[in-house]
Image (cartoon, rainbow, N blue to C red; front, side, top):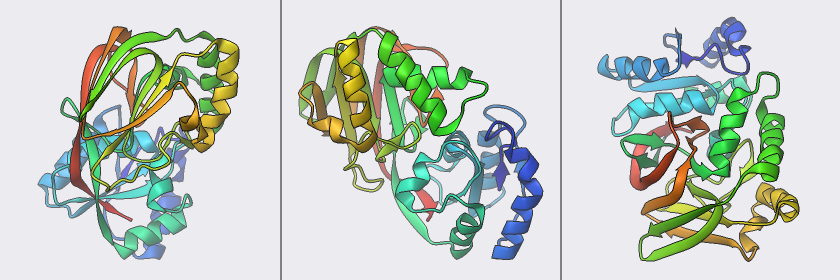
Length: 286
């Protein structure tokens, strides 16, 4: 079990004894390792795989899951999930309870499920990829010190609805292309992102395809009408929104843009990037 003590604004670290008690009650045996810095969970998970671990559980939020998953893609080791962070989009579709007791019971059952991941130049997105306003929202959220979870994402979203400038983009998938002014490009493996926004309501983690959403430019006042529709997925019915399926996607924009994967920002904004599917490359305990 890899515990990120900084998850949930530092509250996860104070719950270590609670975690031990819940795991013991569920009959889950294993070691708990604490992360010390960003990226440390990847190192710890790789060490665990090299040592022969059959399962590595991430205790934290979506960011912790993202890091642990990097080390497990393409291996036989399974990803376990113990939700202790502020973002839990990945577990929504897997049906894993938000409470530790319920999640530990799922971990104890040990049922494996093979799921797809998205490969972004050698890094893996387990659930969501966003470029443009989505990436900027993730950047704003990371800088917040007090607002976390769904409230923090909502505040950052409203902020960028007002100020984010559109970009000119070319997006190409399997057998289709798009060129035009956009606010966002999302490439989704699961349905949810940003703390429960249903950006790809028809996406499945194991369907062998990525769901691509292109949100065109709207006047700022109209954006406030569009925003609530991203919550339930009904925005896909709007005239300037385009939904596509693809196994490979190439995105080019007229300026460097922030990009997130599972809510984790790439180090620098990018102008061109590719995303490709790796079918059933990750085993998840769910």
